[in-house]
Length: 69
Image (cartoon, rainbow, N blue to C red; front, side, top):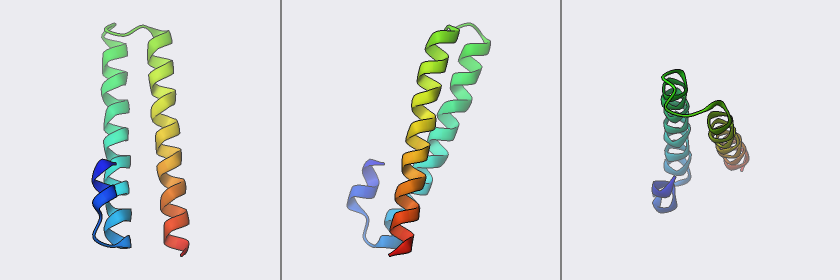
């Protein structure tokens, strides 16, 4: 997400945000693995996973509003 601050164009900005969504999805994958392996408890998993979901929703909303312009 930090890279999107220095995007060279609107298209580049959206591209960087799409990459951030992919990274957030990968983070969710690793969280699931950590939870399944009992490295993090259910409460911790739910909390962090919900944060990831919220970040993804925010990124999608930004992309939608940016591409409407």
